[in-house]
Length: 129
Image (cartoon, rainbow, N blue to C red; front, side, top):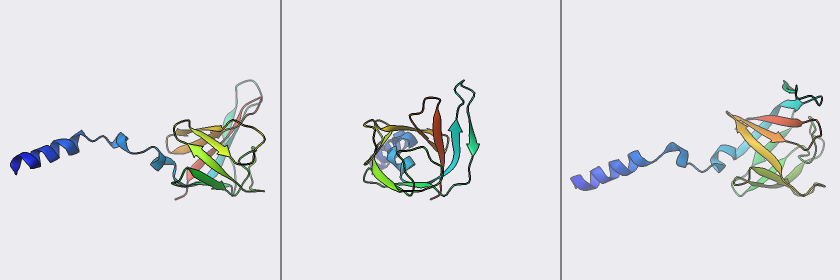
């Protein structure tokens, strides 16, 4: 019995908190809080916005948004939905004019979605649940 308890302790201590599926960091609802814009010279910054735009990531690899994820817009006008890939860190909206996924990344506890803009643009989201 003692050996079994020791074995269980060793196994538990060998588990790394990084073993959590990356999906768990993304699943949930996120709200747009900042947008990035660059005048073309690399001096762009993220600026706070007052927006109701949200995106919700589901456990099944799908997302829904109350705003258009195909376009860089601050206020939700038309909703969108699609799939996401943790392996590629991309969002693939169902009805966009482009065929490549939008890249996303984490900056601490913020989610950043990059758009295909000549001078650089992006959106920063904060988890709301």
